[in-house]
Length: 69
Image (cartoon, rainbow, N blue to C red):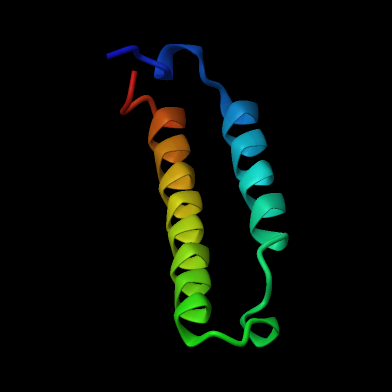
């Protein structure tokens, strides 16, 4: 497996999170979707993106502290 951490700096993490936030903003609101399964799927997808953003921020913090090399 390729190691990405050695080439990452805080701006990389910021760019990734920014792109995810932009993508999240383009997901339709559940009020615009008539189908209940589609509404649930959209909410789940939005939650997964939120969790990925939190994970990236946690990773970036650990990387900045030197706990991940």
